[in-house]
Length: 556
Image (cartoon, rainbow, N blue to C red):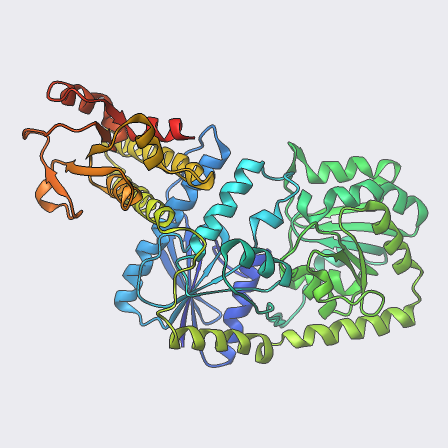
């Protein structure tokens, strides 16, 4: 089979050092071993194509995005921009490459604008609702936006799977679909280790290891609370942190750890992320590994540590229990409980070497179940099932009206993005396109809120006494409004559009230059030009001229 993996990001060159790209890399190598052809399509800084380790990697350039005052708006804007670019490239690739199935990631809603006939599956690479439930990295508004877009993107795929049982259950409940559990495959692709970092910084030291991105949801603050106490209780130990440093409430995670170490700051070592060649020797020599994440999606770090027969202390309920049996092949502590983490760390410190070796071998035995011939074979079976049952695509998460609204509006934003790209060199037109883009997305954002609150526009029009209306602008937003009102007591008598002859909506379409019949109100969906449109319409009609944007805000 030819399998296309679609992702919002992948390293420009060389091996990945972070979770999801690591998964892609390993899954692709495993598929090659089993005789299949994986292809990776990723967003990047420019268009390109390369082959690494036998994997075709296509990159589509996505231009820099705007930062709005609202972080949620900025995130959603960027998701649509990225999804639009990726799905335009998918369409192009399908014209010259045979693809049997497409695998999207839930990250950045990559499947949001997918509309091709090739069957698709969604891998739940994380679930914002559970991954960022502490709201320490993202605000509630951002998390809610991320969650909604992840669920919406899943409706474009024939099947959904997740490596972690917890996320499969939570996401399946929220999107009202069955989410299959397929654990992450593991393959050690490193032929030769590089011990330079270990030799320079850790040789001869006894140390506890944390590796992965340093941010709140990875349990960095939980470690920070007991860091000084652990180092005080165990003067022969160092604490090593390896991974990219993120900001926690405006302060660097590395600075937080350094400050919390107090008088023992010289016994903590913090390094940027390392490639597998340099990282693996560090894991192999660690006394034990601490990964107190608040939530995980079957931690790659845990898998790697257990593969090298290290004792891992993970959190019970954050998916580590899927790999670790407490006291047998590792230890489990309570989520967010610093004291319980310290207690489990002391258990590991006091565990004798013979028992550590025995626990390590059992840890490795569990990871052997993730070999490609097991884990990837389950993935291939899912692909084959989906291909054989390709007509089963849509979920029942949202009602028809909500799906129509979002599909129309996301299409509009994708169109605006494409126009902006073509006009990049023309400043005035680019600014105009940007303005349209922003206005369209503003409407979408508010419409989503209305639908999430269980409200509808037909009730608003009925309360105002607008039983018969006309809609000005029969593009994406106008069509979405038409579908929203379909089957309600509100009648859309006709549409008004300059391209009347080319618009197929099922209702009469007239040009704004023609004579316009009397209605209770006209709703203008071309929000960027509302003022000039309203001024012209008032010369011809006596009814209220409403902006769809104003209507949406009044409804909410």
